[in-house]
Image 1 (cartoon, rainbow, N blue to C red):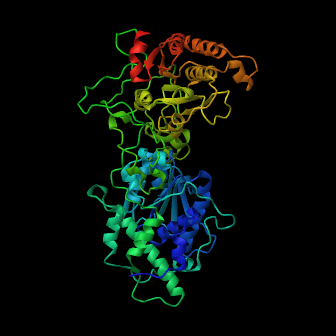
Image 2 (cartoon, helix red, strand yellow):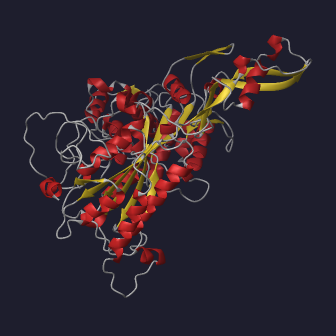
Image 3 (cartoon, helix red, strand yellow):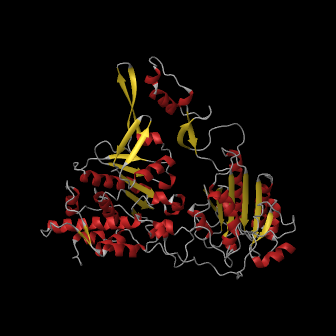
Length: 634
């Protein structure tokens, strides 16, 4: 049945991201089944304001006075089970200080609403992920831990934030637990006391009602429209259709509140129509995300015959062309196929993943489990604390103990052990820190943007980025001659913890500029490698340096340091400085450092990449397939 446009309809369908977010939060408060809200690409500085608005809406729905705050719990990478289900209490008793255990922040046995905030869902600890999967959307929950036994109906609301590029790091089972999905990369807060906009009076009235009123009635056209919008298949489950239908029901309740304010309410209950379903789909920016996405457009390359290709092993990063008698080309670790750019490279006409409510459907096939295994860690020197603390567990030895958690464990059993005058720590009370593993391998890429105008170099980077991904190596990118550089006479660089950093894809897709400060780029790469080998806490096991350049450096190193170019002719000064910087890198030794120079085969100075490889004590690989014979002969 058609519905008349109302003030709520205009507000809910507004294109302002802050208005859409406020509408989504109100729907999550009204509907018990919408217990999880997941925001993509929310700016970190906006999380506090959004949390305050969500907390105020929950307090208003619970009948609390305006300005009252609800209980909040923040989960992060250091969250452990004891922080979720238990709440230790220390009090003075008849026999001195006593230690008791109460239900934790996630146990809703106590009165009042609560809000769970996850600032970064991709870096949530395993206990926090298990808690989210257990509680979100569950009818009942049970916990038995350290003598505490509770059973309750979860009523807490969850507010999580995640970057779009980190979706592939999260389990699909965890993502499915969040029924309300919203991408807000460009949201701006409004000044004043209402950062997401003023709450309409009818919405405030329906939130403050003690009883929800008559149940909503679903029209016959609601279910077919939901399935049509989702293009649902058997492998996606029923959580997404239920979430869309519940959002539509919440919007119908808001419309009914507006009509009731005007004196036109009905006693038969709220009627949910297909129009509410379409509004819910527009609210979360829903499109048919379950259809297989079209293959990304790539630059045209040589035709590949449609015949089975033999599997070839990945060459060693330090393989020299003069050894073995084979071409030192960059061989991919998988079967031959068409070139596909690495990472989220912007493609003309491609759909932006950040605009989808389910971006996990567009990230492509997930990596196999064998590639996600943490590699064996080799460390130099004595055993010391390495990596950031991400949690606490039962101690396995006497190294890196957590004294506070150890004392808490001993205090819990003090009364049982009959200890009155002193605190005795038993071996089973010892707790040690859990630390994130430090990368023990490093990939350094020196990319010369002025040498790839007429060829696609993504295929060349495939085996090196795959090696860094499988070995969990850190990545250091040095850009030379890129368009839009901070200073065109100097090289730009940045460090990434893994190949999933989106800046890597942006660096490889950058267009070329005018100057080529190759000497400064190699000098920065050398400093980064020395710092990694000398000051790395875990001790690097192996490093791989890949230089993609034609060897033509037209900016001397002194000019890069000064930041200005003199009027004198440059000549070979830039090339000589680049060879000198490469020689300093080559003197570091080839035991832990492997150097590779990718030759684009540009005329007429075809011998410069080989000279650079000789200075680095490394090997040369072909950048273009048609130039392999020339490089092999040279």
